[in-house]
Amino acid sequence: MRHFSLYIFVCVLLSAFPLSGQAGKGEFFSRANLSALFCQIDGDQAKGYHKFGYSFGFISGQGLGKSWSYEAGISYSVRGSRRPYDPDNAAAASFHLDFQMLDIPVFLIKYKGKWNFGPGIRTTYLLKATDKEGFVLHVKDNLRTVGILGCFTAGYKLSSRFIAQGEAQYSLSNIRSDRNGGNVFNPTGVYHNVISIGLKYALSAEPR
Picture 1 (cartoon, one colour):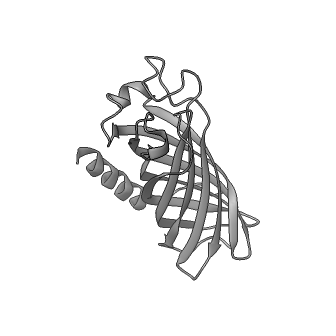
Picture 2: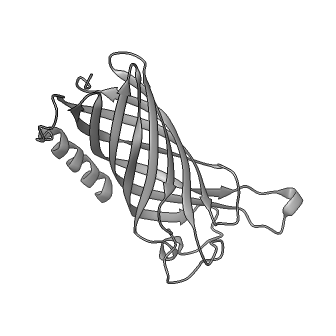
């Protein structure tokens, strides 16, 4: 609850103070977003996007002219990984890793007609990490608290207010800490691999 209250406070703060940069002729804009996340972790001895997560937050930006804009915001996200029970491989224990994270996304966006697309990064702060199956103990001790995801997003304007948005996310650095490897993580590279599909609601006009 304390982390959620902090999230609400930062969202209100962002909405009260619009970005002040004056690059280009675009105007300030803002959006609320809600997305479904289809997640896996490369390096956890499991395959497939079996972990379902979600993300919601607030993003603001300003046009840079010539159909470009930059965006920055904050969101609460749930990522992780899951290995369902497999009767054909009963020796492999099932697990359900659930990571609650605070994201700070920054994007550079190009607009073309009703489409928008561009690269970005998400700096993440790990709030909580658990295994819902109870197989992996002390999950958070095996992970770095701060991480960075490289992202690419593409969206389509459905109406004056709603934008359908997809995003690919991948860790730019190993999410495993150097303290120990845990009993599902590889001793070398471990990376978030996420596909996001969702909606953005325009709180103010976008750059044209």
